[in-house]
Image 1 (tube, rainbow, N blue to C red):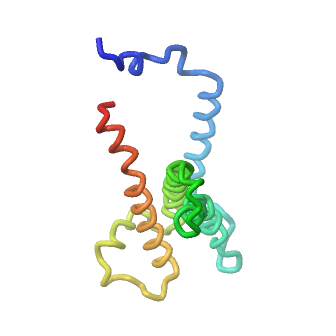
Image 2: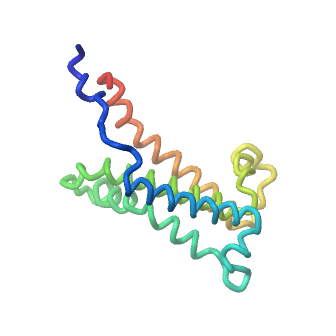
Length: 161
């Protein structure tokens, strides 16, 4: 038997616990709201319009992932090496936060299923659009965060489990 057999043992216990049922309920309510957003549009689902813009949603979504920026500033720019053990958790937090923010931005966009066209067709870019800059920056930063976090995955795979 492998020395890592204890790592692959089943956890045990029922899956359909009270907290799991609550989370499934929250997911179901969110799925209904998301379906309504795509069916009725952003204005009808949020009561936002040109008078009350949705830019505050973008700001809130993007602020979620700022831990990586702050810690990189401390550790690398200000040369505070004693905080280096906190870099990897901060990068993970930023990667997850910005990935969720990019999912939120996908929902905020009018036609999120067309987002794949942005990096592939630069000659179709609307250079007067603020959302173009947001889309490009978020795409690039999320990619950089996951590349920066990849050594953690590579170390685990190199160890064989």
